[in-house]
Amino acid sequence: MRAQTLSGPLLLLLFGSLASACPLAARQSATEVASASDPGPTDSGTTGDGPKADMVAIIKTVLPTSDSCAGAEFPDECRTAEQAAPYVSKACADLSDGECAATLAVMGYESADFKYKHNLGNNPGQGTANMMSPENVLAYATDLFGADKVAGKTPNEVLAMVTPDETNFGSAAWHLKTKCPSLRDALKTGTDAAWESYMNECIMGDKNPKRLEYWNRAKNAFGL
Image 1 (tube, rainbow, N blue to C red):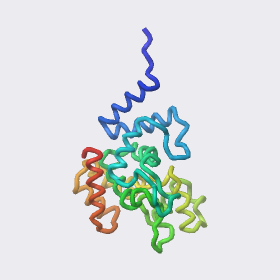
Image 2 (spheres, rainbow, N blue to C red):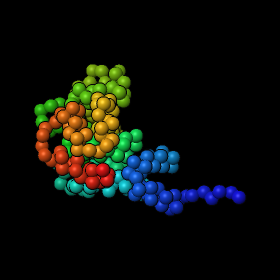
Image 3 (cartoon, one colour):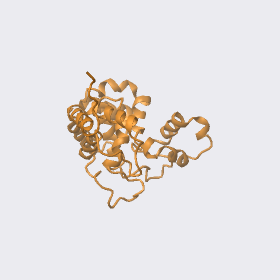
Image 4 (tube, one colour):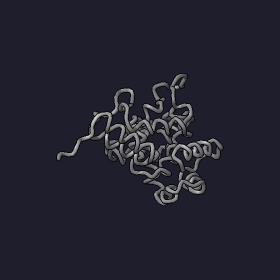
């Protein structure tokens, strides 16, 4: 007897159930389904309905103003949860829930809920969703495109290479994996102690208590 092939709504229902049960599985499923059957994100930055809807809900929980770009200072830089979700899912596909939660919390705080891609201060070349330093932006661009492609470019020109959505939302995961790999096992536990180490030993940013608020929302969103 031939096995019945699942397709259409039945397939989406199956993946939707998986998303509810396991955020990590949902992220991996979203990436696999997009790769197998979708042409890629549309101009709005989404890939349509499906398993990624779980990541949309997660982003909206962690980044409470990400449901809209109305009133954004730089509308061209702002992305809503729906627009960012497929790229965040892809970035988190090979991360644990704890790691994804931590990197999303950092991106949310640093970008003011995905409203900014560049630092507004006097530090040319600083930016991406997690506001990496110009040095890290240069390293990220070099990893992605090769040293010959970034040679001779100004810091802002290099930043422009990595701020398209496809690479902008992968910056925090790249930073964790390449600059702070020794912290990954701890972050997988999703504990406050692991978050504190991540902040002190890897991010080394300001001590604004809002950082912890993002982390607490991320823990809730991922069930940590």
